[in-house]
Image: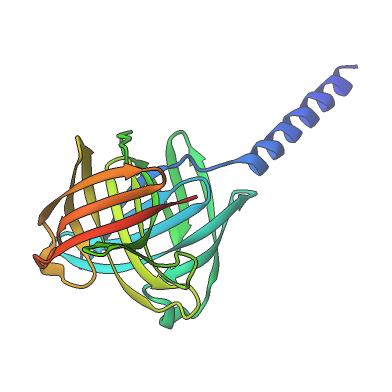
Length: 240
């Protein structure tokens, strides 16, 4: 009798464990990991929500952008299956799909990226502009000049818990045009970016830029001056 009960308990435990493995999901957040190398520390940053994943690497000293890639993902059996929309190193690998084994241990995200890396989540710091946004046009003296956000050529911003990243890319050719990221604050109609990495010009790292913003429906109106000092008045549309 004891043997039967023991077998039953083990069977239930196995089913529950297998079920948990199938349903394991990555908590939406920004995660960081510092990889120690002979040439210095490589900063790894993961941004992930319910369907999109971005992995970026850079050095703080001296400021050096290394790589970014990302796209839509599904998670099953502790395996993250990524269909990439962009990869700054695409020509070296020439692949649009990849799989990354993962597991959650408490609030830490462990990714198998050559070696296991334990990513620490940032503190929750939700703000009005959190989410994914696609560049959708400009405001001109003649009105709004809109672009088609479904076209292959895209510029996207991903904002979450006080961290931001923009990426310019082409989903068909996988051509990469640039990226930049860091931390941000959106409050009382003011949006301020603190640049932590910038693929086009490492010397811009450390700079802060402040803009005006307002959200109308699914559009974010963004105005001020660019990193080059040029006036801008952009429209970004929420990406679901």
